[in-house]
Length: 328
Image (cartoon, rainbow, N blue to C red; front, side, top):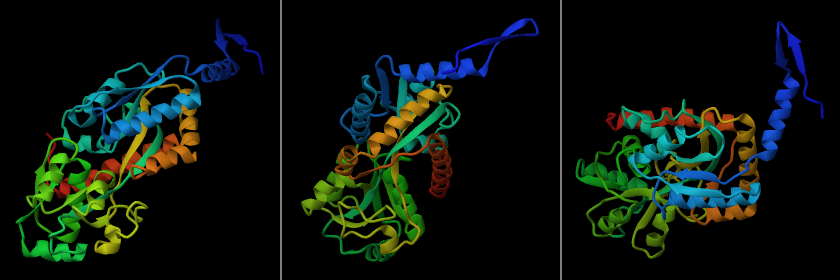
């Protein structure tokens, strides 16, 4: 390796690029030198927490240092994002971001942390998909049947969601817009348990929520699946068509998880984290673990993640505008 040297010029000693390159190599080789915190914007036990703990475990194995999950729920992920944005940009505080990172700019007029300006992208982790379900007593056997039924009950059809601007809400709003259906939105608190109670009792007409949660009810024949939201059929529900196949060409909705760090984090640290994630996400063990909860392992380069976030912010903005949702 070339030795560090300095050049005397204009009355001052200037460090050459060789020194900077040497320092970068040393830093990359020493990172991580202590435990790393992975901040998750939701309470323990949910899907965010599961994905966070799985990532933390695999990064611990890959990099030989502990990655510890720190659950910081609240305000649609803003609490966790604010915490990470204000943390030192040294690679020892990471954010597990969900799709809410792309919706919050349209939902809240006052942002504690800017989703683009305050974070450096590392890699995508996974994509998640949803399924449209109805009660088995519903006359509609297909999405086309349901659309015809809903049009005949204009304004009298309702759907549940886990909150304004969340995945289930946006799934349903896009469906209603593309299907030209009028439906009433009923937001619930929590991860969806109350939604299924009311769906099973007939108080809700439909719900488009995570496949992982719906499977228990589908397998018990307590709800009927009509379509999945991805571009392809789910391996967990191979007989259920995509929404595009069933009735609405062009319909595709997915959630996602990704890793970000505070802006200004050294590029060699970002590269180390990215390489570890890409390697782990290509391994069968992690891919299978994600597939078991109906998630699809999906890595990316930092630049690809940056572009993905930008396009998601634009896409969700269009959907929220169609739904008439104004920033709070």
